[in-house]
Image (cartoon, rainbow, N blue to C red):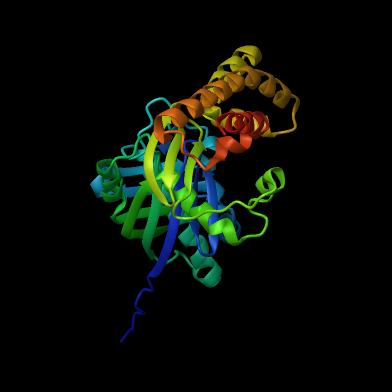
Length: 360
């Protein structure tokens, strides 16, 4: 008789950062980032004559999937991430104005597509020959996941709602070259926390790394010391929101959020750019132009300058409000982090130094 090998289920522990601009999944030996954007395909994806091995190597930037998730009423073909931008189909991105990540389908589709793509790549690395036959075997993965939603959105109910949407089994078919692969994604454990808390936990693990706070220590000529009694005020500048979290040690005491951030400025800049250039591009494409070294990038930067300065002022107003309302003036350190902080650093850093000095 024929003996069928028992299917090996891979078990992974991972974290996901589902941002308005990009989504990141991270495990022990992988890290993938994609633009947070999906596009619908009304029909199954066409087969191509591309070599399967090559197609799998660049799979993450070419995610074409069918997602079936009964609990979430999903049964649809999607282009996810970078693939949605190049698909030519109408794309769906996170709306900055009414951000509710716990309810939105985009975070879930991004998460499932990226995890399934990652599993196909991992399986191919282990057994490339399996993929040269007619069809690749079904894959199965069991996942323990942690992710976070903004402090301004966070309630225990909303966190539980998102956990329940992710928990359980989802079926994702990944299309590449002339074939497809079904990945059964089973979330055994899901924890949704609030965004400021995760950053503080990360910062607390950096204290043993010699250069982590080098800039601070050179400026103030003293070490940065974190204890259970340390009172810190955290600002997480994202694409569409800025979150403030006041903490004692690793315990959040108060938090607040406001709609401000780089994405808000980018949305205004896109309108100005489209008017100036007579074009119809979206936020994601605008960012790509901005990062390029083309003549168009110069125009994009000019269009972005004023809206960005307006956001810088809004952010500094919020910093002042949060300091007054959340902390009773008892703060040892102010931390600023998040993707938006990197982009705004050249304008915000000195303003933050001045602000901190004025309060000390």
